[in-house]
Each structure stands twice: as structure tokens, then as C-alpha cells.
Amino acid sequence: MMVIGKDKVAEILVKGVEPAAVCESGETVVFETRDCYDDGVVDEARPLGDKECPLENPATGPLYVRGALPGDVLKVEILDIVPRSWGVMRSSPVAGVFRQDFDKRTARIFTLKDGETVFDEKLTLKLDTMIGVIGTAPAGEGITTDTPGSHGGNMDCRKIVKGSVLYLPVNTEGALLSMGDLHGLMGDGEVMICGLETGGTVTVRVSVVKDCHVPTPFLYCRGDVMTIQSAETLDEAGDLAAKAMKNFVKEATGKDDFGAGMLMSLLSNMAVCQVVDPLKTVRVEFPLKVLKAYGYSLP
Ligand code: CA
Ligand code: CA
Image (tube, rainbow, N blue to C red; front, side):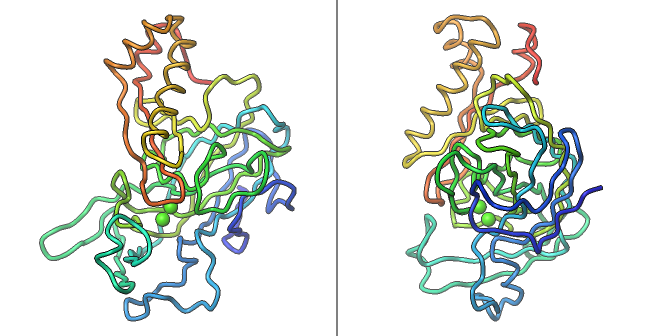
């Protein structure tokens, strides 16, 4: 199996760069990822880390997928995510909802074992490891890995887990897929500033889908399909995600605006992915089984 090591990382998703690896459509590829602190915060006594110039949110890649052309969709089936044996969280005095509560950075290292982590003597948490940064090269200028957008990127969507299927736009030949910023656990909003930051290995099957009518970034997770949109404000991101899903439901069911609108009001759930990145991210979830009742199946 092809493996892209965590020596192949970048802080920007951009077209026109040399790929870290090249694969065929339908191939399975393993990405080894660093954590969002560039694997630099390893000791609670040194919350600023050891590296002189650490990368911010390094993403492993990019992977060039043969046959992917602008206008296609890249289907990314997340077959497995294995976090490493430890994770880290760090407070920030400059970002996050609680930034005014902190005058310095404080770090906490967690042991990750058997799918769990001990928070303290009273609380053990079950992990649900997700991918924070995953995206293709954007259409225009490069976009740094701290920012989400229509190319994916730093969406911090806790539904991007093992078993999920993510559909991303192909904006340049080969798609140029990158990923990183794993979280062993994260709540919707990511309010303090981070998840349970970790590195690990992600195994994906990547397939080029031609003539694909899903509103990217588009996700399947645990019975629901989801639109994911990012914007300056949560209001704007929510509207974009709901409208993208409504148009998709219309096409998938054959309903008119009123019919699709009713289905959305009855059955869709809007949730905040994160409020701490340069753009805010909202997802809208809709049950796939309802679409199946109208004969729809995922590409
Ligand atoms: Ca992130
Ligand atoms: Ca993170």
C-alpha cells in the first residue's frame, strides 16, 4: 500500500506544486500526519514547544490522483484512522472563545490508549478520532491550512471519522489531496481553540467521480449526508450550508422548493463545526434513508 510519510507536509494547499505521491483512481493510500503543533509540544513544562519555526497545522501531501480533472469530484472514503499514543491540548490568549481568560499558553498531554483517554481521576473519555484539516488544492490562490473553504481545509468537522465518505472538489489536475490536524476528540464549536490534538495514520480510498452532482464539500457519516460551508459569520455559513442542502434534496427527490423546504425543516439538522478559525464552519445534516426512499443513492 502506498504510504505518504509525515516528512511530506505543507502549511498551504495550493495548485502547481510537486506532489508527494501519485496514485490511480480507486487506490488506497495511507497518510501519516503530524499534529497541529507540528509535533513540537511534547512536554507540559514547555507549552511553546521545542521547534524554532514550527509549522501551523501541517498537512501531509499532496496526493496527485490520476485522471482527476477540474470539475470532477474526488471521493475520499475514510477507511481507518489510528491516532498515535498521545494527544495534547493548549490554551491560547489570542484566539478562541475564552482567550481573555488566559494570559499565557498552558499545555496538557494526554495518553491515548484502547480508544480512551483519562481526563482526570473522575472522568475517562471515549475517543472519536476525526480529521481537522482535509482538502484539495483550491481553484485560485493557495489557502493556508488554518483556513477552511470550498476546497475543504481546516473545516474541523467532527463527523470526518472512520467510515465517513468525503466529497471534495477537483480544482486542478490530480486534485492534490492533503490532510492533517487529527483530533482524538472534539466537541462542535471547538470553543477553547483546539481539540485533543494528535497525529496518526489515516487510510483512505480515493476515487475520481465524473459528472458528480454533490455540493462540495459534501460528507456522508453514520446515516446522514452533510453539506459543510465556511464564511465570515456563523449566520452566513449556516445559510450557505442549508441552501446547498436544500438544492441537493430538491435534485435527489424531484421535489419543488416548497416540498424540499418542508423536508429540510422537518428533518435536517444544522450544527456548528467550529467558531475559532479565520472563517466559521457550519454543517447541515440530512438523513440518507429519506433520499433513498426517492430512489437516490450516493455516487
Ligand atoms: Ca483545526
Ligand atoms: Ca486542531
